[in-house]
Length: 149
Image (tube, rainbow, N blue to C red; front, side, top):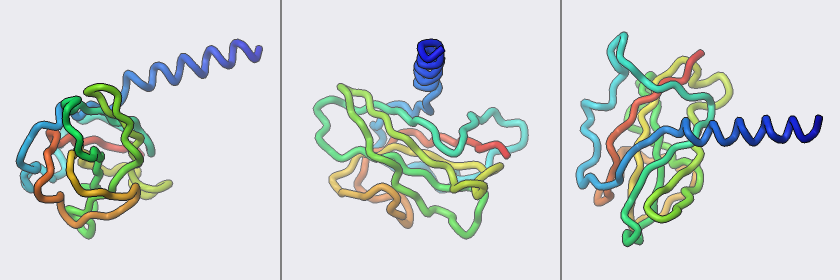
């Protein structure tokens, strides 16, 4: 029984890796435009996430900058363009990954979030709030996700 449970758990974890939010390459000199930071139109195809989700991206192996994933809620006007630095990024070759959080407990359920990866010389701490996206960074394409109710 214990072996079966271990196999099921490992299979589930392996399946989760395939479902990571893919931000693509961290190769854009300009931050996402402010007009992109909006709730999508009804019927738009948007990935769904839970309270936590894996996020992945890529960056050149030769890039020695700090890499972070940032998240902002789009459904809350009071938090417009306030970004939260997510957990530590793990780099392996050109790939990177981290665990991101979308709200807290019930707060954030049913909301849309914008996610972006950045490479910068600056250093940030997980959980730190940034007012706007940092200047002078390199960015991924913006990704919009929804956390169901």
